Length: 104
Image (tube, rainbow, N blue to C red; front, side, top):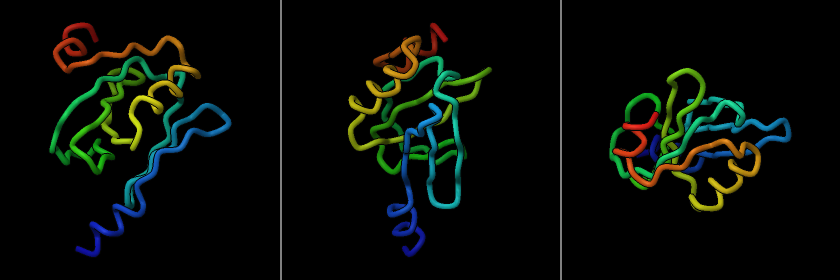
């Protein structure tokens, strides 16, 4: 129970001045260059696999680099995606996993 409280209080997604997305989820941390993001997709999942940095089942799957992906759950998905696309206008947005799987 204590770890869940720690995780809840220490999961953050932050855009940096040098156009990176810093992700922190408990003890896990990663930084992604926003220019390396290829696509985002709205998903619903309860997975807790290693590349998941999400507290909610309502998530965004981010594909970046050469075949890398991760899942996050920002509070305001629409605003979050708009900010990513403001920095990297080439990001493709898919509304469902089947579209993203078939085209990425």
